[in-house]
Image 1: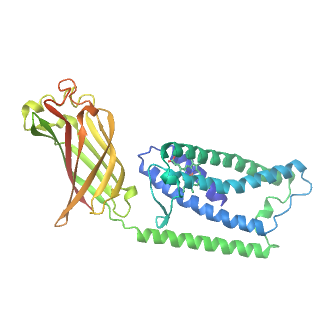
Image 2 (image 1 turned 30 degrees about the horizontal axis):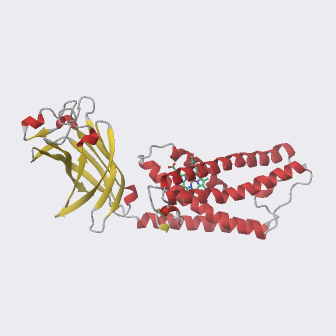
Length: 363
Ligand code: HEM
């Protein structure tokens, strides 16, 4: 448990400083949740053991204040072994990201009741994040105190407080129990990990050739512009949607239109401002499956450095094994400050612009 808890503290601090869009942060959070819940189970077993067994007495020659400090820190360690994982569990239950927990990538773990139904989940989430951070911060301090105490006993007082923790020859049953638990624990962990590896299909779809276009109504007539230079990166694993992702980059200067009058000013500062913002990007932050086999994708579309959330349906057609993904969504050009100087209202050019895209997918 000591190794697990120290590992959790290091991984927790590390993942927290990663970019929210970093796939490693997502991956590490899943393992953090798995091992955190494992610690919660172990803590229950440990508490039951502690309550039904006599603990070793304090060394007789140690002063009274050391006994009191040891009692307080041991009580705090037990309390934090529960508070740290429970606040973590509360955090993922209230989180607006609403990501399910699958222990070891296999066992579905529920959210706590009520928290997902709170009216203001965002403020509750930041409060509970602070509680988790504070609980783990106090845990670090108590652990350091605990380790310092054990080392003082070993090197300064030269008593048996540290060494009596390890199973020794006299405590024959302790040693047997220790070995049994270690073998059992490793066996269960190995079996679960092996099962997780075997049961997670590795079919992941990658994106290829892409095409992005936009249609605006100009004086009542649908006018299409397209961006021949675009790149889509996608990794869509139907059995693991939380770690699936979709991102697209469009070179704004590559914009063309069959209507040359429209094409001319598009790279200018009033429209795409290609000199300052050569690329428009889309980065997904949530992909969920829909009943008809399509996907609902939510993410951030950034044009001219302005970020707006967009949601669209991504459909995948399979023609003789060739998979093609496509989708479209409508943006409000005024929200991205597109053409506001020359076309401040929608008298000539509609504010609604339909963005359509497609790309090929292969395994
Ligand atoms: C003994 C158990 C645990 C320890 C020691 C621990 C430790 C930590 C630490 C040190 C952090 C970083 C806090 C910060 O600086 O903001 C963290 C963050 C987090 N923990 Fe835990 N944790 C434990 C259990 C859990 C459990 C059981 C869950 C969920 C089921 C969980 C979910 C999270 C989440 C979602 C974050 C935020 C990650 C982020 O910022 O993206 N933790 N944890």
